[in-house]
Image 1 (spheres, rainbow, N blue to C red):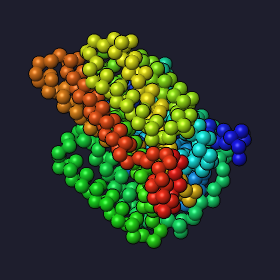
Image 2 (cartoon, one colour):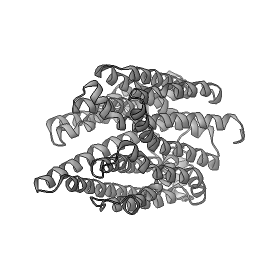
Image 3 (cartoon, one colour):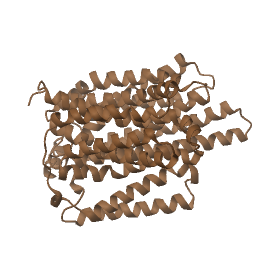
Image 4 (spheres, rainbow, N blue to C red):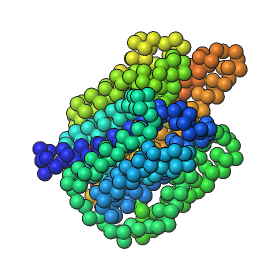
Amino acid sequence: MSFASPRRPLALGVLSAAGLMTILDGSIVTVAMPAIQRDLGFSPVGLSWIVNAYLVAFGGLLLLSGRLGDLIGRKKMFLAGNAVFTAASVLAGVADGQGLLIAARFGQGVGSAMASSVVLGILVTLFTEERERGKAIGVFAFTGAAGASLGQVLGGVLTDLLNWHWIFLINLPIGLLTIALAIPALPRDRGLGLAAGADVAGAALVTSGLMLGIYTVVKVEEHGWLSAHTLGLGAVSLVLLAGFVVRQATARTPLMPLRVLRSRNVAGGNLAQMLTLSAMFAFQILVALYMQRVLGYGALETGLAMLPAAVAIGAISLFVSARLNARFGARAVLLGGLLTLLAAMLWLARVPVNADYVTDLLPVMVLVAGSGLVLPALTTLGMSGAREDDAGLASGLFNTTQQIGMALGVAVLSTLAASRTEELLGEGESRAAALTGGYHLAFATSAGLLAAAFLVALAVLRRPGDARAATAEHDGKISLVS
């Protein structure tokens, strides 16, 4: 089927809209949280569960959902996930109490996991030619970048002009339209059948391990890294995940065949993604806090201030990344993009208390355009080992490492920033100076994470045309796109 076929562009639009809705939902909530707290009387700890309930469900169910998509059909899983997400969004929008809102957010996380886990699996099986796949991944990455910043702007507008309920209710028309278009646009796939990989024990181990691990990470700021709560639950989570790996190595029909990780590009791409997202997702949150808490920006001003970053990332991912990937390979493009992001974080690590937007922040918003190179390259590498029968699994794995990276980054960098701020306040610094000092440490740590991602990409990922890599991958029966 050629790229000019009307079904494939429509399918790409549907998949991108679903990705946009997921990203949009994550960023739109952060702006509205103060209004939700006032209306529903959340305590600071309780308020955090508006985000945490979503993250626990989303991150914990991605791998299982991806494999189930391979077994029962990725189109069915995508449609069901969007239906669950849309219904949960309506419940969140009409919620008049804390319990209902948190339960609805958990439901949104379940629906997002079901739909998001198979999106990339559908994409790479729909676009099989390398250049077309690169273009499709660029479009998909563009919508993700747009959603991140659009969410902050839209959240401020809806909350200020209407009320916070509409940040959830806006998902109703988007969700219904996505479902209506997906039915004719997405290709039918019957799936392998549950007998091909219905590993109930493995599913229980990985789902409980991931959920418990993500829960532990998001509670670090409340309990501390060395508390009995963090160390105990973290140890249990690691035991469960280790049990899952052992189970997959011995099960006759494993949930996640370990051959998926034989490809150095797949394993290295997922690890590099985890490190990169740890730095860049936390950057999005921390730079917004810096603008509001230090510079005094409002919610809408903050969203508009970050808009140049979204435009730059979108332009690079949409018009440049696919051509560079095709010409130089995803590995080289990834390395170049990581260096650009590293420069942005080092620049932020010296931003002053009384920063001028044009001279101190706008250059950062331009430099983070490197994400438009990094994200499509990581997607290409992370999905390079996907076969027709396990593309959903590869997609679920890729999204799982993404969520783990984001959760770890926010927990680690927020804790570091808060600890450094308290230390500087104790030394007599003004609140603005202390906050800025905390953010300096967080951004410097982000730079370290990006440097680590660069080293992983340099040492682990294969160059295009490497004969040894081709031989190794062929022996493992895994086809690479770069």
